[in-house]
Length: 455
Ligand SMILES: *Cc1c(COP(=O)(O)O)cnc(C)c1O
Image (cartoon, rainbow, N blue to C red; front, side, top):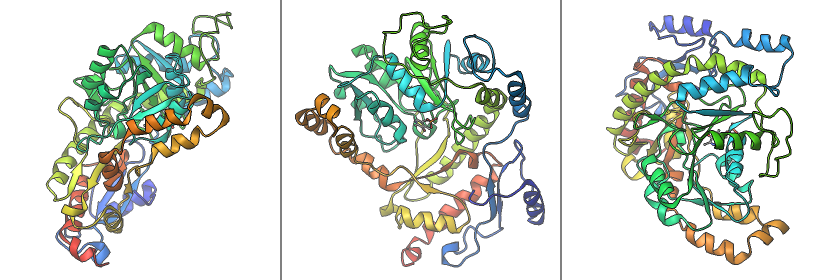
């Protein structure tokens, strides 16, 4: 996970270790166990590391990328153009079909997908958008880009997702949309958001940038609300370097999103047709090259998702048995998780040491892990963002004070910000025995927490 190894090094080292690993894709995720005893001393206290070496390359080449990219390069049609054919258009059809959505608009990245979707709803100065505080900053940025106010709901400490039970009370006449995020790929409770959206006639946009192929009650995440936004940035579960898309089942809404991402020009018109006074628009078009990579990758994402689902659920079970370790729970409605991040929480009172020390101890076992999103003071961020001439005109101090009061202290979010840890999705692609090694490492760190605390 931290060290990169070539396939050749991997093969020789793993055969020396007497282990066979399951090979998936061109460069598998590998953890080679040392044979160190799970009951032995943690590496941080001088024991033998649980892992001899680890490697987890990402992205994984699947085979057709080179042919597809060279085809575009030589053909000379490098942008999607005013046609409904080519790599981008074909990718849109294939992506929508795989996810069971009526329409797809590909974009240059996930942030652009979010900004275009919010723009298509006429989101503007003074509007409020309900979302989660525990997210990648792009979610919040897409709201601020419209001079709107994020209204963060506190998180559900079990699932790590925004708490849908708080959504209704957070709505006001200024609420433009609900923007639930499936952070880490774990499904947010879509029943809650769809119900509030219906009751109040407010649109629901899902930030599914980390949630490819996750499901809520059998439906793919990103297709349960009015639109779902995806990212294909290289770390994501469907990578193309940079890229994004919006899915929707509403063809008219799709056309509005298309115009917002294409400088007002619709999909069906071949040039500016004069009807562009609809809303603010941008150029967030996807170029043909990332689409060429995406079409090659798309054919393989379902099999990786199935492996992550099996390993992730198994690891959830193993880690839940360790005192003070709380993996992000998948709600009963979450028929499949998106597994972009494998997330859990270290409760120092039960575990014996805090997150920072746990990370040090885990890394000493030669596996990669990192702290989750720290708790950010979003009220302060927003106040500073709107401390400009325009910001002060749109949001007088009293307005921001009232909003800050409604945001409140977000206590569960602060706990998660202090206790959350994760590793990346590629660690879940590999043999099931890797999950045992990870759980063994966590277990022996916990058993020796009192000693580690003295380090
Ligand atoms: C990655 C991500 C985005 C933004 O996507 P980009 O393609 O990086 O612009 C938005 N929201 C979440 C939750 C993300 O993880």
